Length: 329
Image 1 (tube, rainbow, N blue to C red):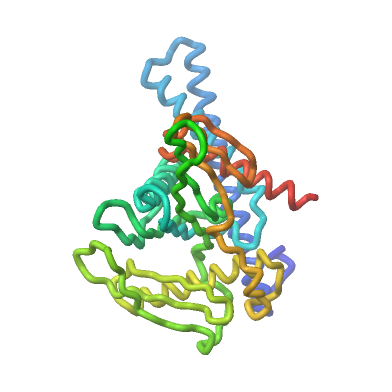
Image 2 (cartoon, rainbow, N blue to C red):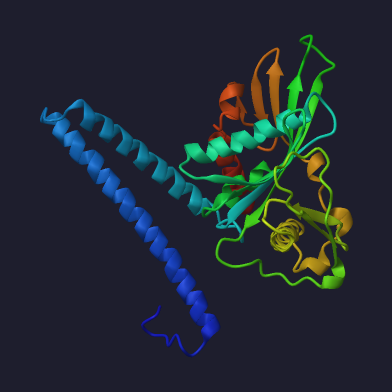
């Protein structure tokens, strides 16, 4: 690919070639790591057959086998993620609803669920914005996942997450809502999207009920033609928050462009934008029985507490597979 091509002749084409080479190199390195771990597990297994292994080596072999399994799962999932922004990181915003029992506490439980999921998968989730309530819980919070394919993994989490409680074991039930919005977090370049300043409304919203030791001037940006508004409050100054909010807005608009199948932002139909509060994603039944049901895929898990502890991998995998099925139909 490179041998028969002069990279200096066409900078744009050269950049495309180099990006493809970098992607190929990442795959090769991942496979090398997988091969090393597999060979390590095989060697320890051979030592076990020779009865030359102690308990420490046995534990090492077990951990190596788990690493191999995890790498294989991640590699298989990444092969299914072929959306335009799937390879990017993810910015996950959680907002408490206005109804139900302690929606702010429920929003904080979801926040912790995603942080724990990342820890279990060997990644890191960084809470960059957090608007706390005086009585506990959060009004809103944003987590950034700065690893490849985070958006592909988590995009299926977008929508309303409903905590359901049947107080007397029958209807009517009590429902507590929080919404999750996932947009790409561009790891290497800024979103390739041009927006006219005339279409943007900038403001510095007040944050009632927030507990912060140091005031951080928040920035809010609204895209007037679509009505989409985002904010940032976790950076050190107003300018940094403004830039962060602008990137989030661009990422959100790119998601909507993809959902509506249009060519650019100016073609977005405002009336066709899906309200994520009306897009039910998952139901969490806490009483009198425990069940977590994914509305989009139909997957059900009986271990309510395990899911809130970050074990959401079955839901993520089911969503990725459902996307693949819909793409091939």
